[in-house]
Image (cartoon, rainbow, N blue to C red; front, side, top):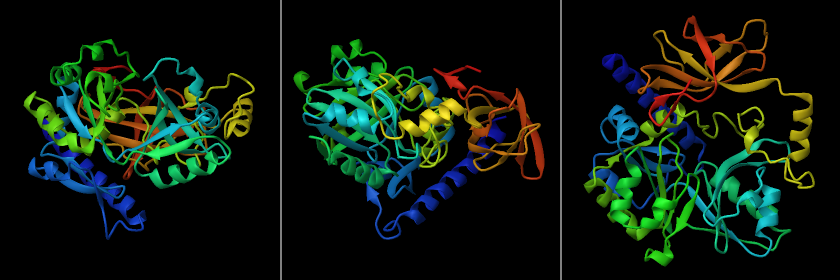
Length: 395
């Protein structure tokens, strides 16, 4: 099993590297100039294999994707996510503005630091991006994806013209995600802030009053494990990373981050959703706040029509117990349906020991369907789009 897993993950590395290169080819300046996070030199020092990811030079792994994956599931691992874009939204009209721009309702945020996951939709109900918004002392903080940064900023600025708001991109920040069953304890031992113990899931803390100016620690993540995502001034990021290393936190790269998020059934922009995919199809219906009925958000009328008429596709999880690995783009065949589905993300699961996938399929799909892998149709089980949480199988 270990040998098969090893070769499957080598194959994944090639696929992710190719994915990164495709993203690079779409970036106008990608071939000439890659952006680097403040931790780039440290990644090189630690043996990180650096690749182009959405125009950023990022570590794919530091030697073993498998070991990094298991470190997060069993202990603690950390990821440089400084390529993510942080935008602060302030001003008298900030709440009304975000209630219009986001499909979820920021009025649900009642406690400082509380987080909300939402889609930002276009006029046709497609997903411009998925993001997290935090309630801050002087407004709100958005964290958006690096690959969609340019269109996100352009869209946010366009919609801001009718509101009394100020948008400030925080390119002065770095961001490190520390994830795993022992992640919080190890971060707590470094920061020595008892207040962090009071944080609930999807809640953050501005640590200025505790002696860490411009630090923000949130109990959020993208792995299906507990942990923190820590925003800090760029100048303080390297020392924090080194302190985490001394505490036994493993350096982890993009490859492990992808297998972890897929095991957790978490969407990846450009795969499970994009500008043409409705959140009602991308397993994001729970992020659409229909109440109050008089709240007009971008794309609402289109989604309302889809909700009333019913969508023809949905996002599901697929489990392949036989040999083989499901990959994005493979065809999914549903009995009784002429229309074919498609695997949106697929991988070998290091935790489960077999292949798993997310797929957009006809809504009539039953308990099983077939996936076209090379020249074979393999039968797969259809499950809820969530496979592993807190290190345990959940389907």
